[in-house]
Image (tube, rainbow, N blue to C red; front, side):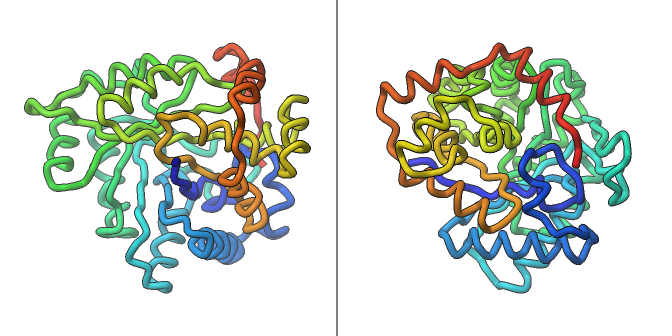
Length: 309
């Protein structure tokens, strides 16, 4: 069975692109309020049996909030993954044009790994390249690849997340990377949901090759919870759960999905998401959901147009 993880993209900063987040968060999103909200969702996740948490340097103060929560609670069985590559530049404002800036360079990797260590220490067992794409300079940067190989050799597992219409190409190319005769990446985190299924065959191949497969954005940044296709709504009514649980159950039904991320912004959203664990979708229901898929280019264009709120 797939394992659930809590992703902190919606909880470490005052603005993000997830639909349905607006009314789940405190009215006044100062640092203290967002810290309290993040800790409340982390507590709810831990109480529900979730033992994986996923963060990133660009998720505002998510790593800081997570580190403080781990220190306060004393939990030693939580498996943490984080990411480098994007920098958060919004200065805790919701009305800026640019919230994060991407750079896959040796300097950024070195600096951000140091920052992650300062906030999370030995809790980090998996460190991902954030939103790798086929044109990333990482692929042609031997010094960066050697530095990543050195981190791998120190005992930290390395992975990458993908985004954009050619996720499949990224997965193929990244899993072929070797440093000093050994595969560099042991894990892949990709967007797959009933609207965007294009990377599915490559994730199956990644799983067969021994890589751990994480699935992010199973709710299509909230689209499948707030305005789902009619068939998702019908199945939700049939199974007595919300459309979010149906969408995540479809992810869990994929045999290659090791870890499924919930991007819940409140304990209530988290509990609704986790009902997916109790939903068994029949093959004919999965076939019907497959008909909801959009062309990858259309899906990613829609995602790019979502507002930061």
